Length: 154
Image 1 (spheres, helix red, strand yellow):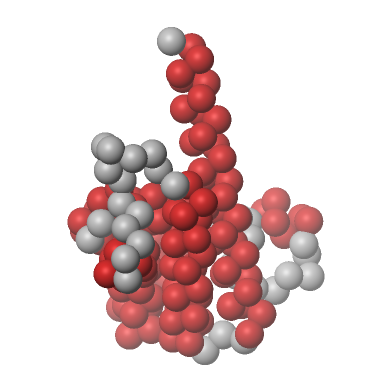
Image 2 (image 1 turned 180 degrees about the vertical axis):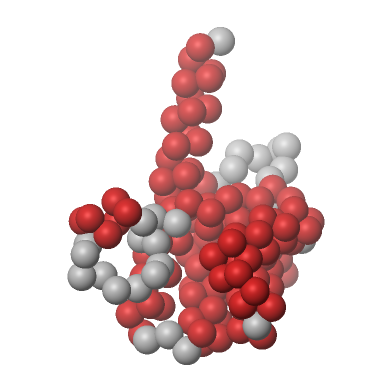
């Protein structure tokens, strides 16, 4: 956020324009399915408690925590029900563009529901969407190059 504030001082929203944790949520949901909810819940709760203090128990915050941990697994599950199974399988290569699409859909769901809970202005919706999408993209690119480097090192 300090770097973001240096480049975009007029940007008043508290949303990060490069939110890497969304990438973690999406990749966890892709790899673990609904079990990702249990894996992500402690970390999301701790972050909300750190940022909001005792306000973490306000209904709007609890709703946001719930949506943050459920949105990505729900999107992957709905896509599977609709016939587009993106979950990893040993007999096929991962479709990274498909995971990005699921991540953007998850971000839309998360942005709309979270900002409705907080009563945010419309610009915050787009800020969340941009931050989540860029966070997922940069995390996936970083992992892609890290795995490529590890393969070439062997």
